[in-house]
Length: 308
Image 1 (cartoon, rainbow, N blue to C red):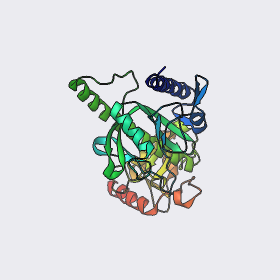
Image 2: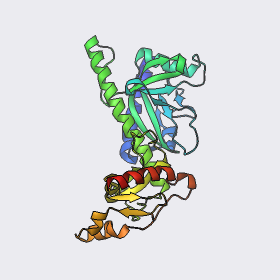
Image 3: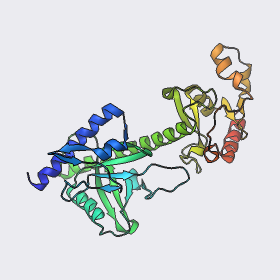
Image 4: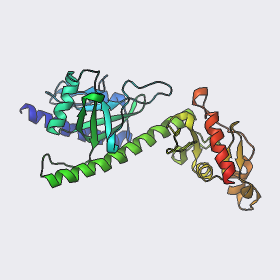
């Protein structure tokens, strides 16, 4: 088998392996599994290494994967990848030399439209894998490549101009959807971990019934996806918070809207909402820097007061 055949076979086996591991572990894959990889012709093929751009030794030229490091609150990531023009991913070069061998490898992937795997770090040791992804742009001025995610299905290289335009539009849509999902998942995981898997109001512990509620929403100028802009809430209290049935003061005391307090209904209303009035949050993060920011709560509380 020539180099091109080995490259194609390894990538195909990689995609199969990731599907298998996703069935075992869910969408959050352990780093240890990715570093161990699989065996191909008696050669171990790891899928991830210490650097963001990774090529296992078995591949002749082009990297197999790119990785975005997990967010650690208060610490900058080594390479801050970001959403680029049109919703595509801007992925930073390795270092500042455009001719570094890893950057050259990604440039070859772009020229030949070879599919890669994109690992997005949810937290240290856990990654979501997206594939196939393609390098679709190279900008030495910003030291970054542009990355598009495509659908997980068989794809054809080349094609006529109409097919290329269809593929471009599909990749724009898929990439935007993937980025939104990854960012929401990362925010949720970090918030729920900080609140030790409990609703901060009622202590409910079933993760499938918990959300990471934004204090200031995504579209707000300060609505960054940091834990200090989030609160772990169960589905009931999240909906009540978002709809201004429930407010949280800067001193972490809960207020229930007056008309809800006066309403007579069943035990859910009484125990779920009315009895929470004037109580403090029951669960908050242990680390002070992860707790809800007082100025964010004050701004959100003022919006609650105006709404009621």
